[in-house]
Image (cartoon, rainbow, N blue to C red; front, side, top):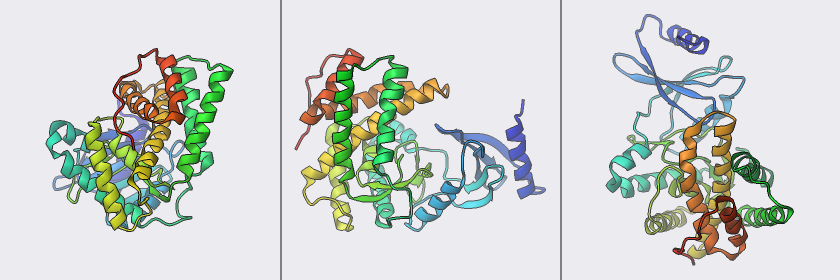
Length: 336
């Protein structure tokens, strides 16, 4: 049975394209209330975004699409908009995500990630203050709080003792201190394999409506410590070095000392992965989206590996072990 929302979308599209036949099919749905439909005509296809206005605001998507297009990266063009009802009509960037292509053809990873690095640097090069929301202490702290609120308390049903709570807050303070010291650029905020499309030019970039102005390593963590696909640490290290070298040549404010940059990358990973654990738990318990639970083990793996490498994060590793009742792994990996 066709929902009222879908009927409303079709009516808007028929008004936009009178006397033109089209077929409508689900293109994708994300972790929010947004849905994307492929509008297939005889000679072309477009994408219709359905963003219910009581839950979503299309204006940030429009603003940031226009902003990122000035960086010469491949983002959807906005062809028509209906902000009252929460509909946008976009160019179609295809139906092959980076994740699908990387799983099917892992030998293409080097070239694909090289393209993604180049696009990320171009976005970062147009960065300016006071254009996007500032990724400040308040927002970073709010994200960290998702971990105890949704992952520990709601999902694991684990109640922190006062001692454990004090240790966790102390760790949060150390994470924030490091990450707030990093140079700032435009941050996509979800620059990973499900939001990058295999296109020409490559990649197509989606889901950028929550972009902010914040720490330079954040998107790099999303890309290489991806919750949906895992790579060997040797490869991640190589790709981070390649980004760092290109970023320096492009004049971006990365440290001239790679060991400092890599430490910043690792600590930003702790920030993101604590947040992601909270978000995945919230998606399950609040929004009835169980699929993300399958990705939690990889996120925990990233988090543990980094906590092992830095003395200041050992208390967090201990807490994770207490929560998960997991043995301590023996292999530590890279440090500088």
